Length: 152
Ligand code: FES
Image (cartoon, rainbow, N blue to C red; front, top):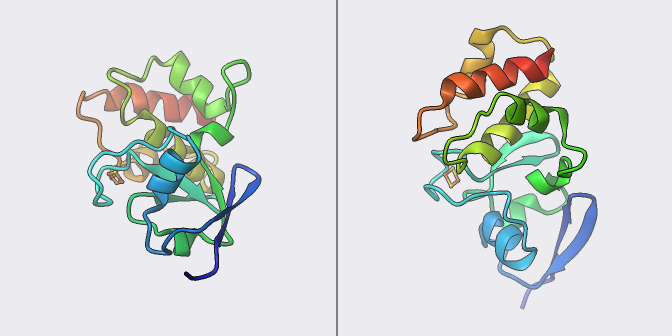
């Protein structure tokens, strides 16, 4: 068996005796009980599983445990709490951006990364930033409004 893999998640260090090829989303959900990242396509195409890796949006279904080692991983649980939501979470709540809500965690994580590098975006920039996060209910209009609200 190879060396345990060290992972930093939401500010806490963990060690896993798992193959380095294990998808990060399995470790987050199954081993750490963090259900913020949702399993959608499993192919890196829908964005439901998005987490931050050193502040950059990453798809945890196609990121391996080995790739994530030594990076700061943030899941939705690491952003805010129900009592004190992150400003992006608060904006999504204020705009009632969810219908079924399955895509929303990934949308929020992508938005957090986007606004960190583009704090005052145009609507077109926001639309482009979220173009690879899919919502099957079609609440993209409310989601876009939430992104713009969070930016101001
Ligand atoms: Fe990871 Fe769809 S579940 S991108």
